[in-house]
Image 1 (cartoon, one colour):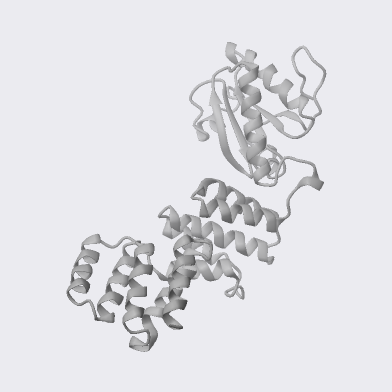
Image 2 (spheres, one colour):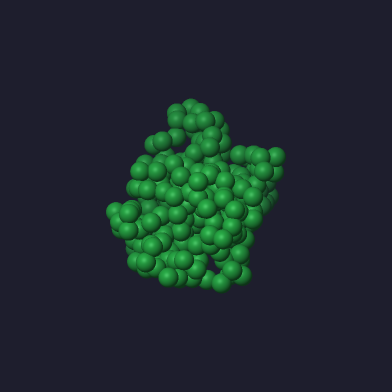
Length: 314
């Protein structure tokens, strides 16, 4: 049982010491349910003796909304090296199995409280840290994760997707959607190999799931790394041939290859305007793939669909 200096004993599961052998369960797994604050300290460290009781007091006062794990770095040097602990005290907060925040040095109690409050807010967004009745279900968490991805907050989105995938049956639609969302995030940060590995983890038979369909569309469009010089070349040709749907289709393809999806939407629409049936409606088919890849909530998709409808039904 761990005791708070100058206070009453803390519940054994609320504040505990960890080693390299127990870190996975005490921190990584435990943080899938509530935030876990890890205090890296040493007996010879004066600031550690100042900070420790403050942290423990705050954790105890929250009555289980957050847990604390203490790591004696003298006894766990390998663990400290793996986590790149360079100075003491160092505090790291884990939520959903991942470190999300931290600080170094002894902070006053007011700043420690602000730090923990910030962690609790982030955990709440991920559906962690509160009473079971207050926890959002997986669908609600997916909605928050999807919105975070749309807003460009990929770190939060990936943390949420990870928590959802970890907490749901591998055959569930929530698990599948989380894997697909995570893979899409990897694509957004340019990690195509990791995205493909994540995609391979999706069980077969879910191709029609919206998140999986979107991921497959994204993967089919390449990695967006083509040289912009090709785009400029195709653009010049299209400008010289303003009535040729093939020229604008080629420009749209070049923009897709260069990762210029919003520009590609406009260009493919221009090709459709010139001849909606050209090459068996190839521009329309490609445009729909781009729409799928960007997602229904993307502003370019909303505007593009309206414009496409006006072209097709004019």
